[in-house]
Image (cartoon, rainbow, N blue to C red):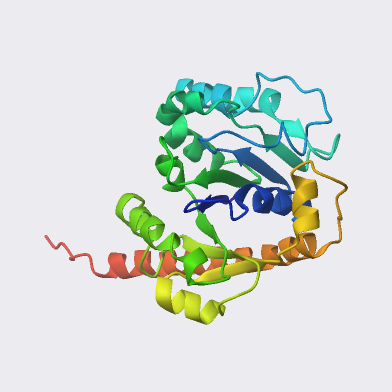
Length: 266
C-alpha cells in the first residue's frame, strides 16, 4: 500500500492537521505516522484527554527497523483512534526535538518498512527547514505532498526553495514519474497558475476551516462533517488518481527502457 508523505516549506500551513483529517476520514485502513523531527503534536493535542504511555512511537520503531524487528514491534507502538477496529491507527512522534538526531539513522529503514505495510501510511514529516529532516523517508514515498497556503505570492514563495531542495535530494521528484505534488489549504491563487509557476501539479485542496482545525489540535469540539473533513474525504479520490497516474508512468518508462536494451546475439 502507498506511503504518502506530507511536508511544508516553513511556517504552519497545516501539515499535521491535514494528516490527521486524512486519517480520520479516508475510506480505507490508514496509519498516521508522526515523523516530524521538530516533535509530534497528537499526544499534547488531539489525544491529550487520554492517558497514554509516553514511551511508544516512532523512535523505538526506528530502532526496531534498524534491527530488523519492525514488523513484530509495530503493534505495541500504535494507538487505535477507532478502537477496537484498528482501521485508523497512529504512530506517535518524538516529544523532544533533541531526539531527532537519534531518529536520523532510521529514516530509510522506516520508509522501507512503511512502504510494504498492507495499509495506507500517511507520514506527517513537518517542515523541511529543520535539522535531520526525514529526506531518506521521503525518497521511499509513493507520493510527497507539499502543503501550501495559496492565498498570495507571499504565502507560496517559501515553497520555491523547498521544491528545489527536494529535487536535489530526493529521487523521482520531477519528470513524468514524479512523486511530488501540492496540497493546497484554503483558497487563493488558481491551481493552474500555481502549477505553472511552481512546475508541480496540484493534487488536492483542503478547505480553510479554523474551527475544525482547532478541534483536531485538541482545542474545542470537533465537527466531523465540517468543510475540512468533507474536503479531506474528497481528497482521497484525488490522491488515488495521482498514485494511479504515477504507476502508469513508471510502467511506461520501464517498458521503454526494456525496449531500448541492445539485443545480444551469439
